[in-house]
Structures are given as C-alpha cells and as structure tokens.
Image (tube, rainbow, N blue to C red; front, side, top):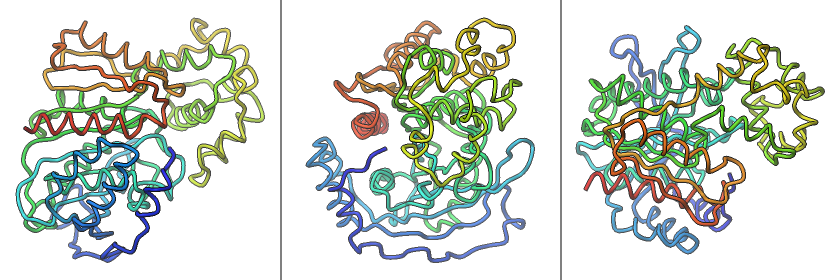
Length: 408
C-alpha cells in the first residue's frame, strides 16, 4: 500500500492537539464484558481535515465532494478490548473515532488491507494519511471503528490469522460490542444509533464481506446492518489460490507465504509447510512474518517464480490429490459462500488488478445473484485501468459514497 507524498507532507504538520494522553479509565471487571481501556491519540479539527482533503483532491478529485460534509472536530482513541482466539481470551486493539459534537451516531467499521508490520497497524499509526481519511468520516456524523486485527497492536505476540474467517469475524464483532458498552459512559455525550455500515479493501474487502454475512445472519438481534462496500477482496480463496499457483510468476509471493504461515499456525490444514513450499522458504516463514518486515522486504526474500516457491508435487496435485484435501478444505471453509442477502452491498474492484484477480469479484457477484440476492441490492462496479494499489482510494471513495447514499 503506497502513500502519496503530497498527502504525507501535510499530514505531518503540527496539528495534532493531543497525542498519547491517557484518558479516564475504569476497572473493566466492574462494568464491562469486552472493553478494557482507551487512550486519546489525537484530535483533528475541522480546519485540518478540510486542508488535508483539499490536498488529496488534487490527485483524487472526488474527495472534494466530501468537504461540505465536514461538520465536527474528531477525537481518535486507541481502544483495548477482549476477544477469544483459539479458545483463549486475549486483549486486542483498534481505533475508535468519534465526533467532538455530542449526539447519537451510526457506526462505520473499516477493515484495512494486508499488513505485515506491527508499527503500521491502525492503533500504532493513526497519523497514516490513508487511515486519517477514514478517521475523518467521523466528522461527517459517524462513530468510526478501525480494528487492528489479532496479531497487531495489543496482540502483537500472536500470529496474525491472515484470511482465516472465525478469529477475524469474532475479533471485529467483539470490538463492536465493546464500543456499544462504552457509548455514553466512556464516550460522554456520544450515543449509538442501531445503524451499522461496513467498509474495507483487499484483505479488508474479504473481512467486510465475512462481517456482512455474519451480522446479517448471526448477529441481527444486536446489530442492524444497513449496508457494506467491499473493495478488491479475495472472497473465493480456492479460486484465488488456484489462479496464483497456476501462474509461472507472481509478483506478490508474500500473499501466498502469508496464507501458508497463518493456516499452518492455526491448524487450518494438516499438511506440513514443507509439503506446500520449497526450501529455504518453508523453514523461514516465521522469521519473515515477525511484525517487522514490510511486504516488499518479504517479497525480496522469497521468489516470484511459482515453480521455485511452491513444491512441485503440490503444484501438480493441489486440485485433486487426496494428500492435499485438508488444504482444499481449509480454503473452502475460509471462503465466503453466497447467500440471499437483504442488505445493500457494493462490490468494487480495479479492472487491471494484478494482485487480486478481478475474477474474484465477478464470481462473487454472480454467485450472490444466483443465490437470490436482488441485483438492485448487490451492485458491482469497476475502476477502469486501476491496479491493486492504484484502486485503494477510488474504490474506497465509491464505497463511502455508497454508504452515504444509504444514509440519505
């Protein structure tokens, strides 16, 4: 994920009013099932928000349409809360962004794309201009929630469950419960409307669609999901993995290695890593995914040659050989099966994406319609000429305007 230099320059202006100040804390055991603590990281005032949007709109003109919606300063908190990973209670973290103006607000939950560096997790890098763009949505009348995901922030000691459905959904739903717990008391003057919106890109697009299905079908009594926008997500992991391993070269081998490392660590399949990846890559995975190396640095220690990266027996037998059935079953279990959704959904993808093939969005959209979802509710859009990195801002802009249209 590349950050534009012009945005960075204004983002580092000394406009942060409060950084890393401890807020009032209560004994969590006395009041809360999920919430543990919160710290005020920053306050963005409307002048700063408008200035950054003005700079960003020079490169992405659609951002200028957001400026008239800026209505309040924004407080950004780092929140620690409890969830369950592999049957164990653990503390995890994320950002909660609220308008300074008192009132009752809907909730927008944003899921970020693939990250390998703990220092770049949302609660550790709230001044990242791309995260700031999401934080600013709170100024438009939302409580904005940005989870770190397990394995980052407070839970940096854990292996990140990359593209593994259950711990991802559980940890984000528990964050939504934690925010419900503290509205009004730990966030004085801030109430929550029972309106929830989901937004995410890449890994976050996959996580958002997982959440959309879970909130609609399993948590409807607690969360009134009003709509979601998913950008460039690998929704069908079996299809994605098949397209990856069938290529001769792939310029983002970090994605393959990340999945193998996470799925092995969380016992998603029974095959040893050495049966999937070749040496020296198989034995070196844990040293690559230590929370310190960027995707680019990890790529440099792998190879873009699929035959050199992946075990030849796996390449020839992945689709049908019995010895790889647990890998196929794991990918199927963590893919998102279509259902007849009654909640508005936008699927958006850059049409020139070389990292996550647009076929994943096309097949997901077709499957949702075939499952009975109305084409008026499940909408597919593309961004002409956009590769994966180029599509981040345009896809998320489309998603945000889609959500704003649902509110109106």
